[in-house]
Length: 367
Image (cartoon, rainbow, N blue to C red; front, side, top):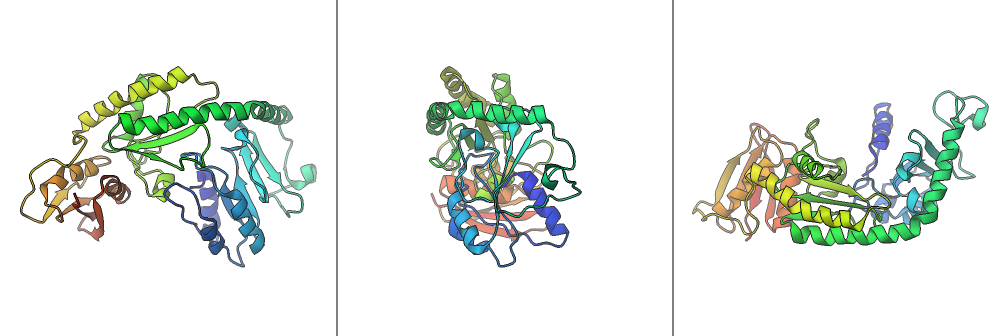
């Protein structure tokens, strides 16, 4: 769930001979403090945790994790970039990081807070300036602007957070009503006020973003269907939720209620157009008359998200209840999205089996 910059730093540490332990999260994206505590070892040098996730907005139990780290004698680094604009971080952290552009301050100014009593040495060369924490002269005007902008944002944070939370609650409730086969992800309660993320079955994420852009809405996607990598969002993968057709909406401060309503008016038509272009099945029960055979094989080799899932959805109605569909695909996203499809459509995910090319994912029809 962590920011990619932290994951890259962990990978570099591991490549240099160190060890990295990853703690799993719940389907909401929240880490369990007990699981985090059990991952701490005597030789653990540093623990890292977001205050809130950048992609789905889930707020982490920082105080409970900090207490587990204190008991184990392990310093805790908290990435607070996404949450600092909305209020202070729960107590107990050792080192805290932030980024001014996240609260509307100047881009390129980072914040590093080291709690008194925490031993800290900057990596790389340093000299006597800034107590050895900076190898050169900082950009003082930008630093002052970052602090001033954070103070200004915080002064209005409580009232704006309440307003935006109500708008996000509206999106979270209305999107599943307006668009069939949608999963709204992230914790519904312990979350940032301005973020909402949902995933649509049978939709290409990039096509969905382009459709919304043409309608005047700039959103982002953790979709597995990014044109550059064709790999799923590592956040959605960690949560075990649907990655295809993913939309992340970040409401800016001051956004008008009318714009949220217009988004809700436009979204169903955009999703329907993309699904029609991809030949997706209609919403509702699987179509087709069941065959006598108990297993059907779907060859989806060479096809990319969301086509393997679309073909699975079309085929499931052609086997009897209790029968299986075996989807053979070389798309690495299938391991995530077929499981998520089964969870959303109340079908049984049997498992993954090796195939001559790619892998075979077996699904048993329940309904």
